[in-house]
Amino acid sequence: MRKSLGFKTAILLLITVLLMGIFAGCGSNNTATTAAPATTAAPGATTAAPAVKLSGQVIIDGSGTVYPLMAHIAEQYMTTKEKDVSVQVGRAGSSAGIKKFIPGELDLVDASRAMKTEEKEQLEQNGYKYDEEVLEIKIALDGLTFVINKDNTWATEMTRDEIVNMYLSKALKADDKVLWSDVRAEWPSEEVKFFGPNENHGTFEFFYEVIMKKQDLVATANLQQEYSTLVDLVSKDKNAIAFFGFGYYVNNQDKLQAVKVDFGNGPVEPTLATIGEELPYSGFTRPVFTYVNLRYAKEKPQVLDFAKYVVSEEGASKLAGENGFAPLPTEVYAEYMSVLEAIK
Image 1 (tube, rainbow, N blue to C red):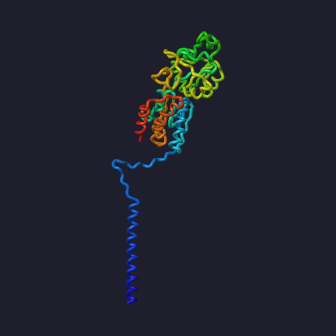
Image 2 (cartoon, rainbow, N blue to C red):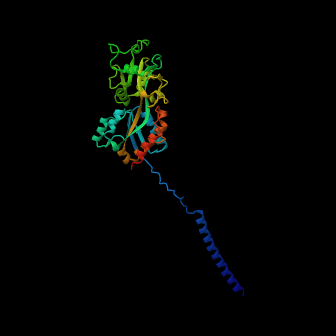
Image 3 (tube, rainbow, N blue to C red):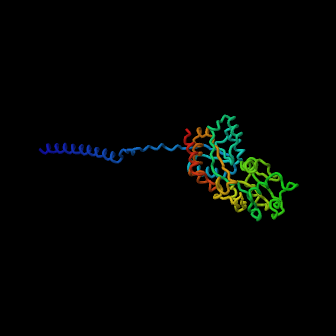
């Protein structure tokens, strides 16, 4: 009887252990299902595609005037958006940059004047369809600024005509020297020292073609490639006068002073509040540009992405003012963005 009970007890214990194992297994499955429920997308929601990691180079050259702005945009792009993309920005000058752009050496070219008809024709000759493969972007507005030495106390205000006539090749005296007193009798009888950027720069071309109406500059004008050289020359000569973009003046106000220009309604100081096509300094206001090689934008994702960044809220719209340019209305940049976003 004892043996029989022991045997039955062992059988019951074995059954109990087996049942406990089964229930434990069921409990384990239920726990896993509860801990990782299936997710259901909200109605109308889309699953975001993984971000594409960009790399490679973007090559830009051209305008020395636009350089500070484009270099700043490039720096922000590489720092905050695409750290593996190298954006190289040069400042050979508008004309020199466009000469590189025409045969396809650049992804973008900056210019402080619009591309000329003959340059567009040269692009066509190099196999580019200008209207389809090049995008002109008006990036900001600049104010052509005339600067003088800090110690010049007489020429702080001048009329537009006085400035233009000073720079004309037909000097007011037979010995081909222009004196300050030739401009206004009460000014010093000392020779005016003329300076400006050379022919590589769109700033020179704008002044020569638009302001001077293609009349030659005074023979004694000293034209330079580097804007930093112009700043140095004017800062060391009380009788000097030079012209360049407003941004270079802003960055060198400790060394130079800007001439207030009277366009007919009183002297106007160039500032971000006066520079504009409909503002008081409109007489010396000009647009500045960057041109995008759309063929490369289609072939190289980093080029297209950078071009979009230039016209984004984080690009020229935000950084123009910090570099001495008046930004354009936001809707203008939005139109360029629409064109770029349509590129496949």
